Each structure stands twice: as structure tokens, then as C-alpha cells.
Image (cartoon, rainbow, N blue to C red; front, side, top):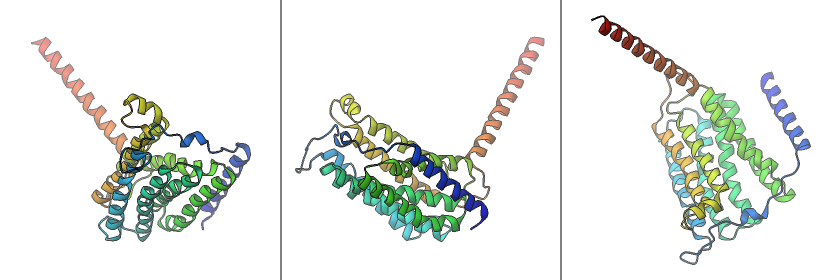
Amino acid sequence: MGRRKLYGWGAAIVIFVVLMIVTPAIPQSQEYHDFADQRELFLGIPNTLNVISNFPFLVIGLIGLVLCLRGSFSLSLQGEVWGWSCFFIGVAAVAFGSSYYHLKPNDARLVWDRLPMTIAFTSIMAIFIIERIDERTGMTSIVPLVLAGIISILYWRFFDDLRLYALVQFVPCIVIPLMAILIPPMYTHSSYWLWAAGFYLLAKVEEAMDKVIYKWTHHIVSGHTLKHLCAAMVPVFLTLMLAKRSVEPDRRSLFQQWRIYWVRVKESRFKEASFNCEYAAVSTAT
């Protein structure tokens, strides 16, 4: 391992230890389990809509996994196959874990809801390292990252402290969009990452506004049900990206592409303004 990587890991560990020392524990609020929509609509399924709205995760997870293993996606590196396979397995498992939790919401069942999501989050981080930084580093980080996610769940369950889980969940939400914008991609269609991030952000807003949305829709659908549907759009966009993309011949980051586009727009507007001025001058002279 290079010296710079050692320094990076060392700095990350120090920052993590300091954060754990200076921040208070975050216990799991029991109000979290009190969802707005608790109706039993059909087939005797408690919290029906919050349960069945997990079905899209199973569909897209299985489709993505099959396509990944069949070689239908543009995956140049072996580490990518492992990373994306872990991601789609996590997505498919969300359907079972989240449905099991919503049948009877409590802390014990919440473990099985969060565990597959954590596998998906950590797999995505490894994929980004493989694609944007270094294949070997990313491939060797798949298992440690997934283990870190599992440990964060166990730590919360045994010590009633959500700080580790919060890091595992929210750090990728910040790091991945930044990396997608600033680091040149290996493949085309990298803007799909931002679409996926946008839908995940929308899902978190809907989750926070569960009861408000349920009231706004006159008790038709709750925010948490919509959260499931929007969160399922994340793997949908990533699957579309994998199906459409090809190796990027001109590796430019999204930020560089936006700058080039903005310069062209400014030049076009300047030329148009100059032409209008010249035309007005000619018209006045005649």
C-alpha cells in the first residue's frame, strides 16, 4: 500500500475516533415505528401499502443481478462484477427485509430492514473507488466496506447508538455525488448517478414527511410508501446507466463538461448580442 493511501486511512481513522469521542450517542427513537399508514387493506396484510411497496426492489434487484452475471452490462474490470453483484443482491434483499419489518415494526425487525440497505450502500462506495480511483483498492475494499456496514448495524442493535449507521448511510450520499461530479468517469452516461442521488434525496424527504403527506393526500398514500417507490428508482436509474453506457473515450468529469457547455452558451449569447447590435446599427444608418 502506498504512503498516500496509508496517510488517507490514518486520517480517516483519526477523524472517526474523534467524532465518536466528541459526539453523543444517538438512540433509536421508538416513534420511528409509528408510521402514518397502518391500514390492513387486503389479504390480511398489516400496514399493507408499506409492505407491498417493497416489491419493486425485488424486481429490479433480480433483473440487475441476472444481467450483471450474464455479462449484459459494460463492465471492464472484474472488481466491478463483484461490486455490482453485491449491490443488486442488497437491493433484492431489501424487498424481504423491509417487508418483514413493516409487518410488525420494532427494533428487532428493523435490523433486517437496514442490513440489506447497508450492503447496497457500501457496495456502491466500493464500485466508485474501482471506477474512479483504483481498481485494486476498490476491489480489496468491497469486503471491508460491507463488513463495516454490518458492524454498524450490530453496534446500533447492541448499544442503541446510531452514529456508525448514520455514517455508513449518509457519507455515501455526500461522497458519491461529489465524486460523480469532480472525478473523470471511465464510462459514458455518468449523469445517471446524479438522477439516482436526486431520487434518494427525495425518498428521504418523503420519509421525514410521512404523516404530513398522508394528510395531504387525504389518507390515500403515506410519505413512507412513496419513499419506498422513490428509493426503488435509485437502482432503476443505475441499471439503465449500466445498460446504456460504454467506455468513455474522452474522460472528462461532469464539472468539466458543464464548464465547457457554459462557455459555449456564453459565447453563443455574446455572438448573438453582437449580431443584434450590428444589425441595429445598420438599420439605423439606412
